[in-house]
Image (cartoon, rainbow over all chains, first blue to last red; front, side, top):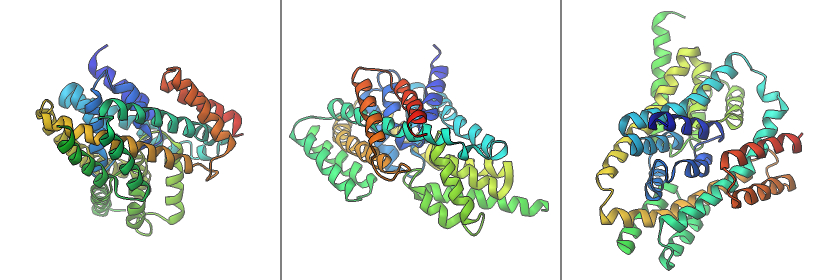
Length: 171
Length: 179
């Protein structure tokens, strides 16, 4: 398939099946790694999207699209990410103002949430195993990051500190 | 509304969303900042809460959905497009620059170390995202139905069922179980 069409459809799918940028990481991992980007590039996409301000979904789309197909690739991926919410919101505000009261939409999302969490956990494990070093330093960085994040340390600081540690330990 | 005040509204929207998206690290994190900027000036508290509710239910980037609701409340369809532009520009332009710069260093030894160090932290970040999502359900706690769907999804994923299928199945199961 044409690369640009493929990028567009992938981001269309990922953004139709997740309710926010961070929630789409697991699905995007499964759809993009090995096809558009390497494991390491994906880690950069997620890492920098949490370091830079603004929507994570758009940043990941921009990075993956750019890595796979240059600036046109980035724009196509962006378009795929923007279309589902835009069309749905326009539909909701103009036509279906009652959709939130439709019980099945709410139930669908309630059912989606545990599955999204699982997809993310599986992807997190793969990233940990393949993207990093699984020696004691890798486990230490992972465990320390987890503790820091649960203590509400800002994600961008945690990710940057871990990356700088990596430069000293792993290169 | 006359022509010039319309432009005022659009300009205000564009500036507001540029600011919110420059100052908040991610879509969900921008809700608090947006609340301070928009409630009282552009829309009522009630409409804002409704917008956040819709954003949780509909698919796609949270930041974009909120931007569009606020934009619509302030200036109709042109308001939607202005808010969208403001919300999109900061993250995408910055990421394009970062992607471009990183592409130049892709084979450097230090970048390998950088990524190897970042990976465990990114994995940890994803664990906390999964945790936050689990707690943000309507029930506000982890129920038996939640655990059932989570366990079934985990089994399906362990058997390499494609993740979009797992998500769709979980959604359908939700419609049955949460009725």
